Image (cartoon, rainbow, N blue to C red; front, side, top):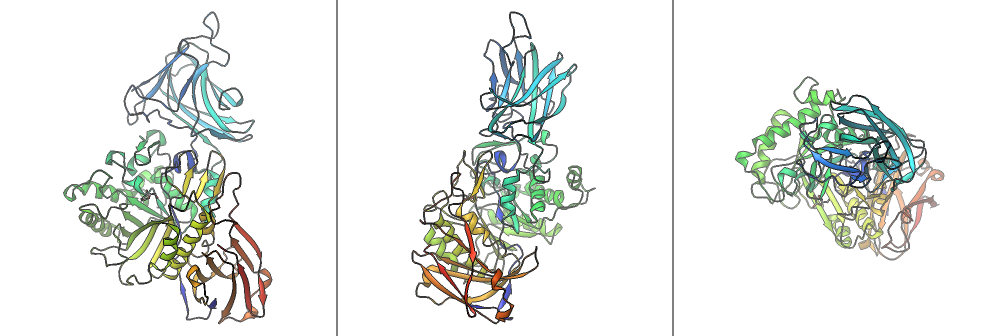
Length: 609
Ligand code: AHR
């Protein structure tokens, strides 16, 4: 491999080249990155009507002691369902409640992770005609062992009252539940029950370990909130940003009918923008362009949707005294967010009148926000787009061999016209639940993207997250349960590209008799921590044979290279079908060692795969 480091044969790559694509899929947010531990906190998931089912809430105590039902008696008009709990037993006497009382419990999303020594904030809205004595406790999954407990004693809750308590856990249990119990006869209504760990990233609500895994990728952008999630099967179940901002208690939540689960929208539009800011990544907001998987809004009726998009941009960027900027400011973010990219729809180009709808969005956004980059859903990689756009969205889900061969996909794409945003790429079919084969093929594809980064501006793998209890779409980059997380080989592969954003691409040429299965690129970057300059050569050996590689660096004084501090990092495994797991989370992960040098050349052995 000849690497030419001399000036003149280099090109700076885009600052946001590699990022992440977040979709509310596989419980990525609700029961994932978002720290809320209660599932169905407002009792609305069964529908905004009564009777409604309250799953996964259940009762403690049999029907002769306790009855629960739903009522449209909430203090929140937008989410009217509240839970009515009738306690038939009493503190003592013949009708005494069992030890521990009766009540309700919530297991969260397949068990709550409660950690000893940590504090959890419970918020609950309560109404009762008589004084109450309710015990809030965090217990194991059966209620047998108590990890934390606090009593709520109130003499007058005859009007709905917001009550907050802190629970300090004395033990750890990754499969815990929340209980609200009493041994006092009477009727109590509960609504909007939230339990959040105090310890979330910056107190912003993101689960620390999952946040860190994303941050370690050093994403240049974060695309949100989907994916098909943006469209919904039906428009009434699509993602409407206005329903996801403001006080969490007043968010209606919605049924994610594409991936079949309820979300309380605690991780709403504001929290996505905050997440982007915390990650130092550009937010890329995907809006609904008037299409669900079953419906299409006619261009003559799209104006309210366009206004909704303008309102969203004003929410993100407007002055704190503007109509929607003031809502953001009230939520605690006075300064505008740095929203510069808006994608008009998701995979909607083939929908009948996409172009007509698109143009309405494009024209209105460009008029009010000329600096916002507008992203079309139509593929311009083979033929020029027939409509104005700053970028176009490109999705690719193929098998490993095809993905590796697609390293050249953008070689002949026209350099005139909009830039490419590969917002979803992944190996499927032979990628298992995330194996080394998929990671190698995707690495080849990304090397191709580095080389074509004069026309490809951004790229992200998808989906980002999967909760093991809801594997709706696989493979994914990060796998988690209530308390653990690991990266698939594809995740670790993406870490190799974490320094590519804004780096300098060098010319590199491979000479090999197995070049069909090798891909390589070379970059210069400055490490932001120690300010040293690094030359990083990435090579993928997609084949099953060992390759002895000599790397010759031209155009650079060899004396300037500190070989002592240079290293080699390998992502491989015994079998190309190997995957990581909770039992063996780093079976396929990066292994670092010293670099071998002979005279001015570097020699590396590339194991098979
Ligand atoms: O990434 C998973 C899904 O794949 C997305 O929701 C959709 O855009 C694509 O078809």
